[in-house]
Length: 118
Image (cartoon, rainbow, N blue to C red; front, side):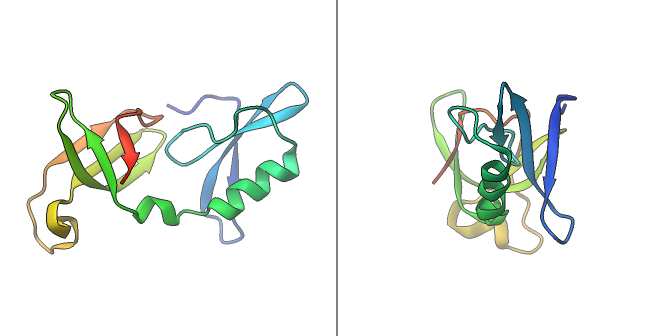
């Protein structure tokens, strides 16, 4: 669930790029996975620029999910929203196969540290 104090930032076509959260005189920036991108508060214009530069392309990259038993699975992000993050198994590019019956994992929002860029 999205905290009520998160300020949505959209690009020109209306696509949500992430959120900014007021912190003292500045803002902390969160991506579409709910992860904080800034270690300390930055000013509003820098926060907007950071999200604009980040875009949404990173969501299409390959990711790795560490499972509770310690194994790692290659995955792709199927959905990212404040309701949660869904990833699908992507061994050998399976996530791109039409009609493939893939293992799906539903993760909380913000996405946990077990989900990492490959």
